[in-house]
Structure formats: structure tokens, C-alpha cells
Image 1 (cartoon, rainbow, N blue to C red):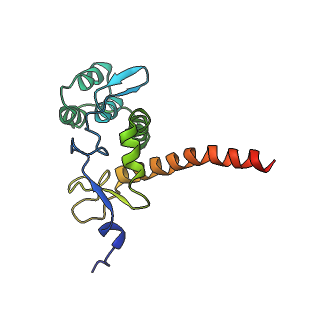
Image 2: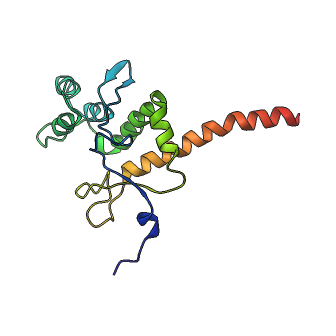
Image 3: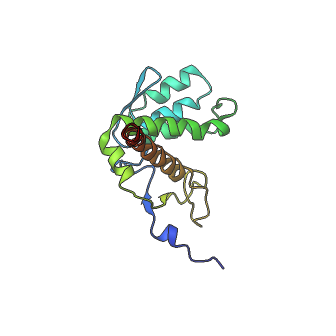
Amino acid sequence: MFAHDLTKENAVRFSRFDPESLLSTVSAHPIELEGEVWPSAEHYFQAQLAGSDSWREKIKAAPTPALAHKLGCLWYKRKVRGWKNLRRVMMTRALYTKVQMYPVVRDAVLATGDETILETSLYDHYWGIGRDQRGDNMLGKVWMDIRRKLRETESEPEKQADAQQAS
């Protein structure tokens, strides 16, 4: 049987598709990235994986993040070459930009403390934990990486000030 995992039990949980969650990719937080304004992080992410410029523009113009996701996931539409290797990078760029643009999102990420962050999708074993809770939880890992980066950048000025005082 499976061992009881307290890190998952005490984790901060969110859904990628919950528009009320500040950690979701579909929340109402437009981002500016690569010289363009994207209605949501989900719009940006899905458009980056599109195999053609026309399809990319169609995804960007989608009236909702849910529709942008649906358009980006159509099985018969070609994705950019190597998209499986790019997807984590593109998601990280979108969410890190969101954190930089919106202090409320930044504060929400930092408020998670040292807890594990879990994306609770039952059906997505890459971005979420899946029904059996053995998925990759890549979206949670992206948020935890961003949280670590935020803490590092916040501590750098303190380290510089300490170094100046010591000299």
C-alpha cells in the first residue's frame, strides 16, 4: 500500500483552472511579456506552444483562458518542435512575470511559507498530482521555484547591506 504522506496532507492546494485562485493560470491578471499583453498566463502559455502564427493569434484572442487552453490542447493542431521540453520554461516565464507585475500574487506565493504547493488536477499527471496523487505536480514545482527565487532576490539587498557594514 501507499505510505501516508504528510507533506501532501499539509500542502497548499490550488487548481490551475480556478479563476479565484491567485496561483491559477486563468486568474484575471493580464501579463506583458515579449512586447505583448496577454489576457492571462494561460493565454501566453498555450500560444507559445502553437505551431503556426495564425493559430497563436487565435489562442491569444480567445475570450476566456479556458477557451485558450482548449484551443492550445487540440490534438490535431501542430505544436512547436520540442514543446515538451519548452513547456515548463514557458509556464515559469508566464508565472514569474505575473508575480513581478502583481504584488498581491507575489504576497500569496510568499505566504505559502515552506509548505509544498500542489496543483490538484485529477486528470493532468504532468501539471497536477493526478487522481492517484503520484503525478509530477509540475505547476506546483514551478510555483515553489518562483517562491525560492523571490526569497533569494529579497535577501540579496540584506546581504549587500551586511557586507557594507562589515567593511
